[in-house]
Image 1 (cartoon, helix red, strand yellow):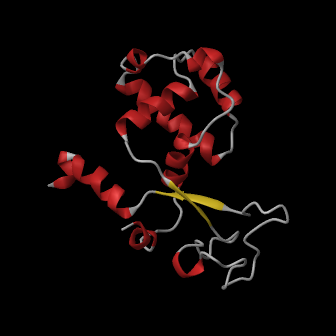
Image 2 (cartoon, helix red, strand yellow):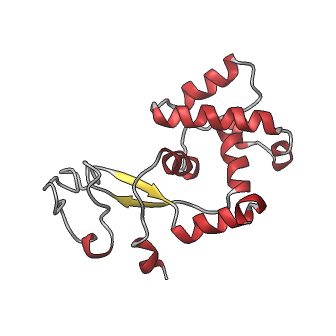
Length: 158
């Protein structure tokens, strides 16, 4: 039950931020990337994927734009792009992270008994800006989805 799963949210981690970024819609994709064919995904070898994931993690941690990230990849003569990385990762991990409003100070996620609150019950910070947008959002994979991913890995499931 999704309501029960919301109670399973853990604290924010770099990994969940990176995973969430991968699933976000992105308006900065170029026309060339939009024409990317599924067959090209198989051209990404394991070493390139590992390098791309490390760079993607750094991109998320330091809020590097997609345009700048693609330029960095181009400068290191990589055939990867942000679009290709996202497509490859989405083909490997079939789950989409869930977005939740969270306290500016990371006290709580506004779920379950907190989902109708306008401010944090712990620190008092507002949940929304004056324009109605949330002050802070965080992405999470449900615990059930994390377990499925872990147990699909033969080494971890033993």
